[in-house]
Length: 629
Image (cartoon, rainbow, N blue to C red; front, side, top):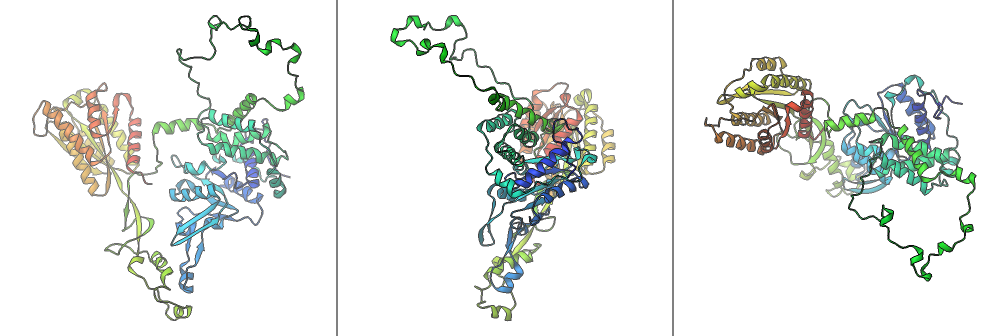
């Protein structure tokens, strides 16, 4: 009837991934709300469209299927006041949102990797509660909202779907990693969904099976308890599909592979630490040290009864057939763990380790810069109640929506009067002003130590590192500025620019020699960062020095130079500008680390880090300075 590939272990490696997708689609059709949904990471194409068609085709024809746009507003997602109907009828008329309309069916999320956090929060609340709580526009209501999510992820590089949403979905597949030639044309129908769902309510899940799933999740480093709950539910659904009255090993195998495998963070359980040698033990390890409590030394009335027990009192042997059907808990745990390991996508753990090394908590694409609120222009970010001021842009629909519920109290008493006087009375408190989010540009300020000590040590290598970093900044379309300090003062060799050729020419002409005015270099970087902020940019300071400052701001030498350098570092810290200090000494020195501590900056020793690592640190620093996407 279908071209479904085999799900056996002997199936071809080219067909096995698609067989798992088919199994997940059939299980989702049986229990869409209990399993949460499915995450499909794939570019738009025939393979992804076919999987979506499978999921929709297995459900009844009357099942609603709602597509939620990427930049959906709260009014469209949750529902709100219908402005036209409210103004026409003279009373508040509520308009249903997309989530309420998707009740009992599927909600499809295209480009979910770019979804805003507020939308993810609403979806998580709906999946947890099975209902939608509305408290907005003066209305309070609770409507049923049980749905299943089909999350379509076209993520590139660091883009990813909100982890809180993925934690609530039972299944997830990377379709781009599968062979598109092996995708089946059609899949087998589930049959009578009513019969399978009725059988699902009677399927038994033994405590030993739950314990095996919990131990497997612990061994794989899965911190969320939802994973175990979803795996247990998936095992029960698979047993109902197979017509079984209780969950067996084959059901646990499928559930562990499909649910736990993609969530694994390690493949081996951590080794338990051995107890300390001086810790008390319940059983002495040396037989000679055991207390002398032999039965011959006890009173006659204190002899244990077991000693007098006849040999015939041994427990009867169980039936061999019965012990073969039910594996012992240890064997069941091993089976489930191996099944979960087989479901770990190839290369997943390596990618997770690489992402941890980058220390990039917030995904970002393109140019990094902070987001700020604005009333002039940028990306729309809703509206807020505010008085009309010069330059503000009024949100007409939101203003009318805020005024509509109060029209009857403001003079309208009947519907006839409303028709005879078709106007809306808007008061001062009704005005809503449009809000926007503007992304500011990033300006990376390089302050390079060009003194004699730096020239003798690592100035050439430092210039090579700066050139590599400048190329990386150019790719991100960041502004770049260059400050060189030597002799008695610091010079802005190049003001903020995007011209990579200009920066390279100035950097090649930079010669080393003279004393080290470290305080002047820090002061110049602080002043340039303040000027960049005034121009609407997000400044970052990257200082490359060996820390041997010997000239103060007023030209003095000795201890005054060190005191001025520390004072200038504290002033940079007070501005809140993110900074990175690269130690260019042949070996890491405490004086540069102390300087970075005064700046509240990251410290990196250039001898122990290549230019690619420094570039990653700058990207991470830029992401911390820009918490909003």
